[in-house]
Amino acid sequence: MMVRLARRMEDLRASDIREMLKFTQAPEVISFAGGLPAPECFPVEELKEASIRLLQQAGRQAMQYSTTEGHLPLRRWIAARMRQRDGVDVKPDQILVTSGSQQGLDLSGKLFLDEGDVVFCESPTYLAAISALQAFRPCFVAVPTDDDGMVIEELEQRLRGNPRAKLIYVIPDFQNPTGRTWSFERRRRLVELVRRFRVPVVEDCPYVELRYEGEPIPSLMSLDRDGLVVALGTFSKIFCPGMRIGWLAAAPHLFEKYVILKQSADLHTSTVSQMQIATYLETCDIDANITRIREIYHRRRDVMVAALERELPAGVRFTRPKGGMFLWVELPRHLSARDLLVTCIERQVVFVPGGSFFPNGGGEHTFRLNFSNMPEERIVEGIQRLAVAIREFLARRPAFEPRAAAAG
Image 1 (spheres, one colour):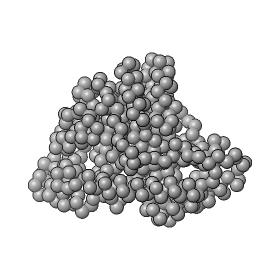
Image 2: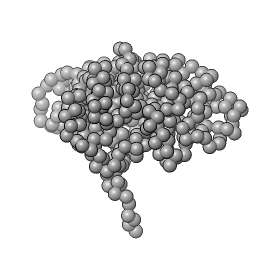
Image 3: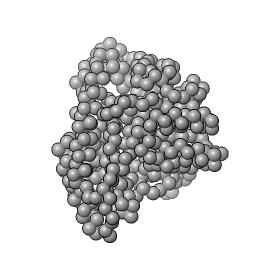
Image 4: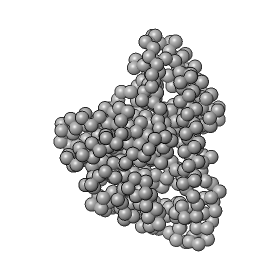
């Protein structure tokens, strides 16, 4: 029997990555698809000891309902970390603990968007952000993006032409999917533009601590003086993604609205998970663990870049990120990465086709590779399989003019 569903369901579909992860469970498959951290970096033993200590000292509190805003010691740590990292003037009572930073995206859509409102984003952008915001039936306007971030002149032109402009969504550091990082000048100019047009920004910062070279660049929130930037963060990339602990930082006039929305969504994020992390932070050295993660991912990035340089045919371009977990590959424009994936599956190597990262279509000649999850020897083997698949794929297509170069 048919049931009547909400109209928003017409715009929603399963994530390509979630569906592909079902296939990648087979041990013989080398997956560069999911944005999975390296499981050997999870501090299992330290967390076990912290959990025992927590349950012995405050077990009943950890099992109880908690405040919507989140566990105060954890919020204090997050606020101090943001101040230490790039001078963000944020207080603990401006930190909302969320069920992963993905919930921060969902709450932002609820707070800012009515049907038909305009969301500006990078081109390409994070596909799970598209999914989260799409439920509110906005119009996405993808702004041209280069190696330094959004092209500000293009953003300004689009802001002027859209009276329903309501939100700007960006990932300035080691962007998912391309791995690119915004320059300081682009960040400064974006904040100036936001101040003029009074359009809020959601600054997604899941990878900011995963820098392997170069100097840190101030965040948008650190440059904002008008309370128009909302920052999202997460423990998923620097600790354990399975705990689903993220956070949202916002100016007081927005923060109180976020709290109301979260109350209606889930009352509060898992008390025991928050307190486990807080106990770990109190008793263990998370910076030592983050340093270890950086060293491992740095090596894996270098191995993947070297393998791509060595194995890929001329005419295929890719980025060389300075941090994060991903790089971006561009085939000649007349080719389809989705079609290539069929050949790659035969070779038991997979990636995410790039078309999923463009909210209005396009980018079918691109794809994303993850380098954080696979060991170095598997990266080498996987890129070899990928290169063979590309050559087989090209052999069945018209020849293209070779032009070996980096995509950024």
